Length: 243
Ligand SMILES: NC(=O)c1ccc[n+]([C@@H]2O[C@H](COP(=O)([O-])OP(=O)(O)OC[C@H]3O[C@@H](n4cnc5c(N)ncnc54)[C@H](OP(=O)(O)O)[C@@H]3O)[C@@H](O)[C@H]2O)c1
Image 1 (spheres, rainbow, N blue to C red):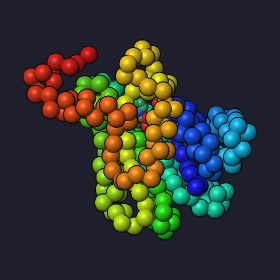
Image 2 (tube, helix red, strand yellow):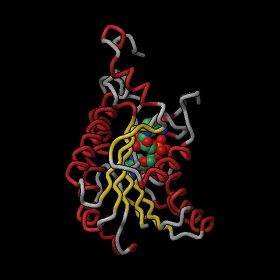
Image 3 (tube, rainbow, N blue to C red):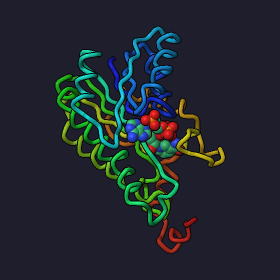
């Protein structure tokens, strides 16, 4: 399989690229800076004797035509697109700088949608392809933290739901994951607790589920119950969950 991983320089995307390379797939790593991607590509190529390349793209303002051309020229096509990248902001808890607010929406929603839109013809023509997106449990219910991030992720989730509907029966599986807390730089200084998992575990689950049905799922799966409770919590209780 020829797989493109957007957000492959760190965290979950990097772990996913490792799982894919280990399973013998050809991988294109994508993030903003080749200086971060090159050592990852070299490491994976050597460790797993895999074909791993990289391309730069900034989700805040991606040149989608250039990215698509780069992927098609270097790989000769693609079978899977993994939209893993994401951005959080500690200031996202009320009033924030307009530039920062727009960046959160661009990186988490507008950029991903533009890139997916550019690759859709290729994924649809393929007949046996995969489109996989990563959202967040922050999108389960609007809270006073991660207000813009959660909104953008909810928007991305909606887009994936619509894509699933559009592509149903056409040979492109559309899978979306509401990810729980992972021990990555995005989590920042949060203390690792029982709810925090290694990104490698989530990456392995994503790869294992590639042959499964289209749709939305929680990773790790135990978040399903927590999300259900959060969703159904009556407002008088929910409103107290502020910090
Ligand atoms: N960590 C958590 O607790 C958690 C919880 C729920 C959901 N998630 C979601 O899980 C996914 C993976 O997150 P993570 O924890 O692995 O984050 P991470 O360690 O911070 O890695 C983020 C990745 O996204 C890329 N990225 C960020 N801004 C970008 C931009 N403007 N253009 C291109 N790439 C960009 C980064 O690449 P460069 O910065 O090198 O460009 C990096 O490869 C995200 O969608 C995140 O929202 C994470």
